[in-house]
Length: 131
Image 1 (cartoon, rainbow, N blue to C red):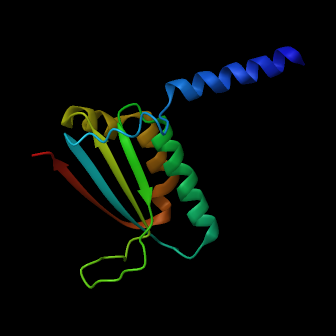
Image 2: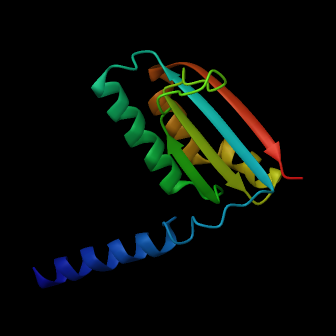
């Protein structure tokens, strides 16, 4: 039993230390920014929202190329220029366009698309290079 507990603690610490965490996610990289808006087919479905959130958070945790990320929902719009029609947004920064291209084909991204694409009806992507 003791060995099992030590093994679990060791594996948890190993995964945590090599994965993205709040400390290493603080440095936003303005070289290349990837912004994605998702419109779910059933935005009021608790099950669909949970499935989407679980999948996208796992994707961001497992991505080898995303330097920083933010997953959000629209706030209540207070001005006419604010578009709050989407269900979720994702903002990811990369050190380069090459890193963003590798992100598009990595296993974590492919798994996210396979798990979640049936949940959305529309996706819009905006990519930006820093000036």
